Length: 260
Image (tube, rainbow, N blue to C red; front, side, top):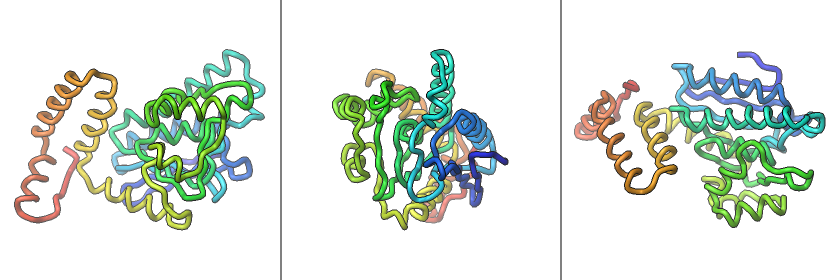
């Protein structure tokens, strides 16, 4: 896999996508999004990949938003096509059977914050900053941010961030539920790798079912969501991994899952 704006590293079942435009604070231009869309789909299908990590090059920015020099030239149709492309990346990550982790190593603004929210888990350096500043340039989030942010932190906090365009620091992002954990910047990559290795050791089929039950259940009323959970719980009992996991527990040994 060779890209102009991305670096891809794979080891121990973990694929790391690094947005590699540090001279532009890893801002997302059209070609970056097109490459991301291709990389995400390729890694989802790759049998040797269990977990995908997304981060940014350098120590200053995760992704500082959309590239304004590109955005300024868009017309109405182009803006909509760009938004749908970016939304498709986030949807693909959410619907993937594999976990996606955002390693937020700096500014995560606009499209960068939205891309992080499309991941299943978000681990932030203590130097990270988050925001949806689109209102400051006369527009609004277009990559799914208005919807995912409100689902993560609630309507009031989401509106505050979107209407003011102000940034919040990593600790505040953790306090309101936008990120799962904050680590010292020097420990971010090793901490994320430890988490990715932990997830990679789990049953791939169980990971997929866990993602499905949470993601799809959010759109249901509680009684139907609980019935859906019961269905997937029952389905797990048809898998080799369920039998291996329970037998390993009884035998007091580490399970060896095969993803079936």
